[in-house]
Image (spheres, rainbow, N blue to C red):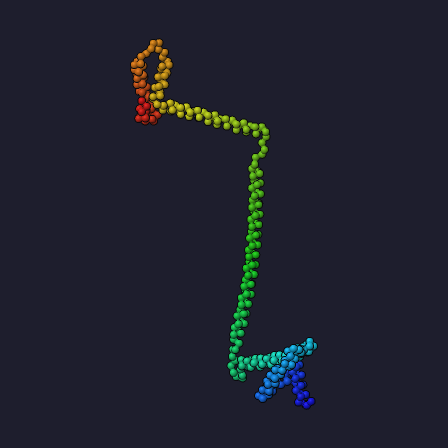
Length: 285
């Protein structure tokens, strides 16, 4: 086996371990690519080779898979570490250049590149100060409210004590002003006096009631129509007179007219005194 073949196989073994491809940095010529395509077509056209490739494929064992994955993991960790170091170095270099540009050289004017950050920091500090002042104002208001509530409670308690003292004084005065208990004899005398006074009032009331009834009855009698009075008088005359002989009808009518005329002359002034209109009285005749 030649040295060239040994080197080729070594590179292929390293590539299989996941380190670097065996042909890294090399490109096939046009003739080589054409030859590879032709040989691949010829090999795939052979049924034995196709059966060998598709019928019984060989896969890696679990041990070889674990080795390959660990090797790849370690390689990529180193690559990422190197890349991060490059990024940090680039950022440090960029920041150093920015700081130098902000400060400027000797005799140059310093520029306010971080004015936005300064304004933001100032606004944040003002907001924090405002919050602190607001919290202190709330605490002061709370303390004031507690003091006012305490003063009001003390005042209410003082007023309640004063009211209790006033009530005690008034109760004592009422107790002093109450009369002492009377004896049984005095109680009976007081009851008798009340009964006598009540009887006197009732008697006066009944007397006045009787007088009013008499007055009302007299007025009613005076207000009776003359026709009714005449009829009553006729009945009385007929009852009082007991004629022995039979009187004619014409004589009775003549006697009734005479009595009617007499009663009419007597009843007219009575009706005038009782405030009854003459027209209503004359309607009864």
